[in-house]
Image (spheres, rainbow, N blue to C red):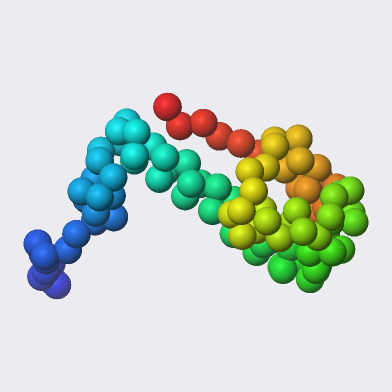
Length: 103
């Protein structure tokens, strides 16, 4: 039987964020959370595009936008409309967008 080692020196990400931006619900924390989700979406789209072996230009052409816009989305420099996201996923990747809400 292995003995479980407890390390009380470990700080969780939530603890770091609580200290730096406040607890969930605080204005600064909510702003950080929103920006993180935008960043994460850009990374997901970039990973999907690369997995499919597509360039930004090829994806842009498939979904009726331009390479610069795809680049801005992937690099967290542009907000994306839901209709555009759906077009990228549906027409660009040939997939389906599935959203969930956490309350």
